[in-house]
Amino acid sequence: MTLKESLLLSAAVGFFIIWAGELFQGVPLKASYFWIMFSIACLLYFQYTKNVRLKKEEAVTKQQQAVKKPVVKKKK
Image 1 (cartoon, helix red, strand yellow):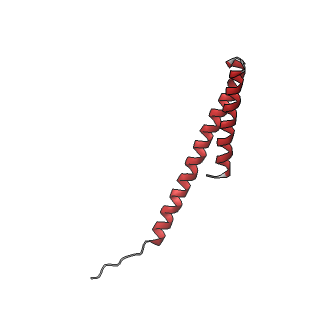
Image 2: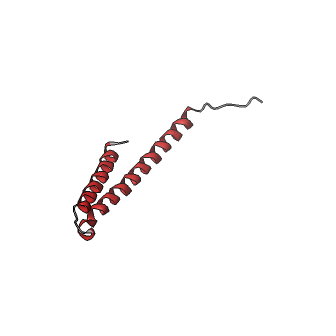
Image 3: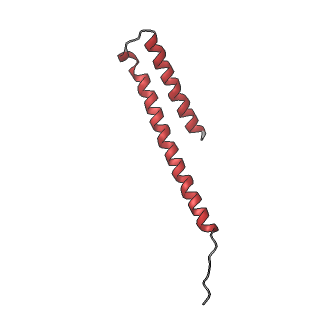
C-alpha cells in the first residue's frame, strides 16, 4: 500500500466518523450529507488508485518473466 492509498483510506474513515458523530448529535442528514459523500469519494478514488498500481505491477512482472525465460532451441 502506497502513502497515497493509506492517506485516502484514512481520510475516508475520518470523514465517515465525522458524519456519524454529527448524526448522533442530532444534525439533520441534509446538513451532514457532504461528509458521507467525501467518504465515498475517497473510497472510490482509493480503489481506482489501487487497481492502477496493481495493473502496473502486473505488467512489470510479466515483462520481467518474459525477459528471464530462457530460449530453448530445438535440435535438428
